[in-house]
Image 1 (cartoon, rainbow, N blue to C red):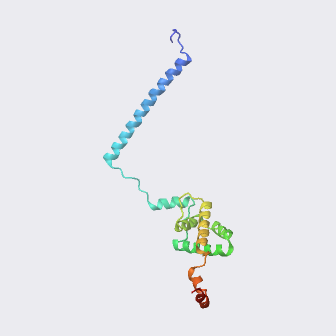
Image 2: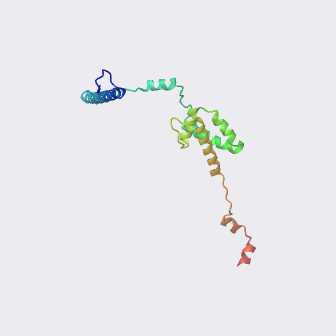
Image 3: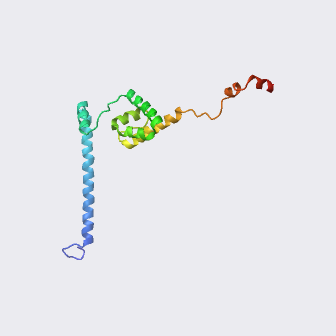
Length: 168
């Protein structure tokens, strides 16, 4: 409008719109701050309690989502682990992988927790299976005694009395 025409140029129009958007943002920021102040004041003044979350609602929502509770106890989980160790010793690691794949995800989580493995809420079945199988292999390695050297007591007792006299 600098040259007296009734129409604005494109750059003038963009500048005017930018100023208007800036003003609208400031107004919205002020409104948001004021609403926050009012909410804090109401909470302090009336001490509104937190929403009551009762167990039946959580159980219904958990069952509705297809999440099942584990059918085994912690003692059963430890017995199952001991059985997996003996099966792995006799038949190999493929057998325990197959047995673990046949179990429910919730049962695998119970076994993992009892073995001290990290079992967060979103651990996959594959991670649980490989972690448990790793603990089985670790248990096998720790249970086998691979003493390469002969103990001193065995070497001292293996000499005959005649050999002992010859050394003296």
